[in-house]
Image 1: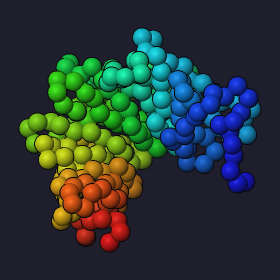
Image 2 (image 1 turned 120 degrees about the vertical axis):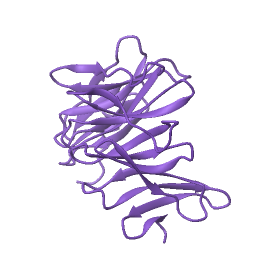
Image 3 (image 1 turned 60 degrees about the horizontal axis):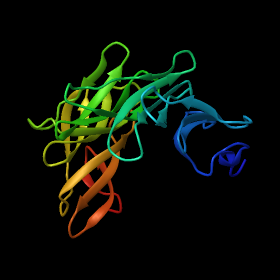
Length: 233
């Protein structure tokens, strides 16, 4: 059908962004200037998801495979780092997920599993970032890092939440959490640190970024056979 300019629907603000798409390719989640939305292609308007009480804006960062569950975070103010992750469904509305650790004052949902059951992201506070996974059964659970610092961020998750990817440790190394246990994906030669952003369902292909002087930043890919390397290779 070509390009669908749903961001120019009547009543839309000047700016809008799409950050997640459902498996059928027809349902999206994102953010207007101030509010998270869900949109089904062909609808006459965006479905605005609201803003959590005590916050000023909201942003949808991921959507389940069937388009029925949206993950994201609410934010307070235009500056600073005061966030809280949320989960939205048509039945519950926008519900805050809290924080993984007592010292955290921010939590940010970055991805949701295709089955809609697991939300991942990271929190901040006490001078460090800490990765988390949320399910209805467990609530928000901290994910351990590759070292004792427990520094970490989660950016991607597979279809059922059994594999989570991001980075962790004081060396900021790409990490895969397998049922909650961190596994290092390494850093390619010539780079200083790495990050994993997404994984296929079986964890056999992971994509992300590599960083470090003098090579700068480039896309990275990890496979069991070749390890972490620049995607260009």
